[in-house]
Amino acid sequence: MIGDHESVSRQPLNAPLAAGVRRVGFRKWYERELLSSHAHMVLAVFAVIALLASFEAMGKATPGQQLTDVLCILVSGAVTYWALRRYLFLLMRAEVIANQANCGDCGAYGRFKVLSEAHGGNEAHVACLKCTHRWTITSEDEE
Image (cartoon, rainbow, N blue to C red):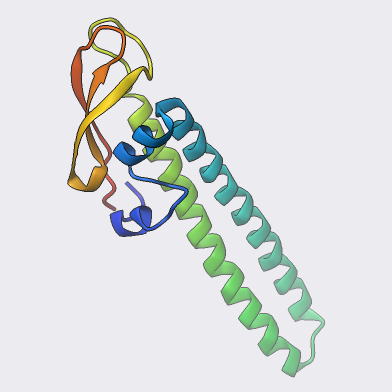
């Protein structure tokens, strides 16, 4: 997947799976992951607009101003790249985990509690709240 484990665990709004589910429950954790993902998409769109505006301003600028425009182009490009990667990482992580949130016995979706965790909180051993069936949900936070 896109992203890296360290950057995810340092972000307070994007808690690892086990910690996030324990704190607010699966459904709210999933909603927050999607909202955070889409906020990064909006940032990427704004950064692309800034990138295009910098390219347009460069054509009418003096040589001294062109240096500033080049700096704006580089910064806007870097922000666009980072925001787009983060958007895709958060969206894919949320979807991979959501696909594992169904109880194998009764089919209840997102109704489980975290029993234990492994791999820095990105693997959760869970139990269904409806029928107590146990399974493991994993989130691969490796690039």
